[in-house]
Length: 75
Image (cartoon, rainbow, N blue to C red; front, side, top):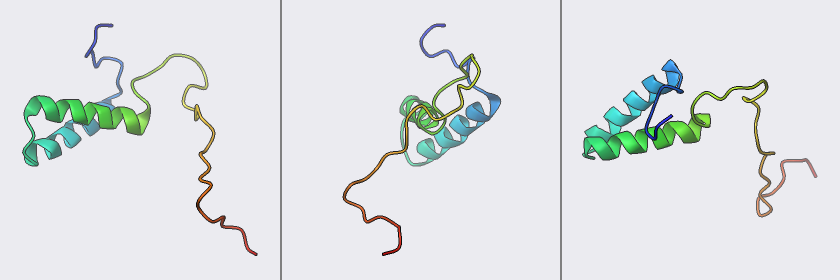
């Protein structure tokens, strides 16, 4: 798959990217910059295009812990 090929993305991801791209263009960014940022946003939100194999939609990393935030457990 060549770089920039969007065939491995779902229809929903393509719609999300188009909507995000329109917002960036409305904010005054060039079409090329808007498209790049839109796909970067979709990748961050969804983890990229389709991947083969069972269980690939599970979280690949454990939840982060933030040591400086107070816990939500009662005292």
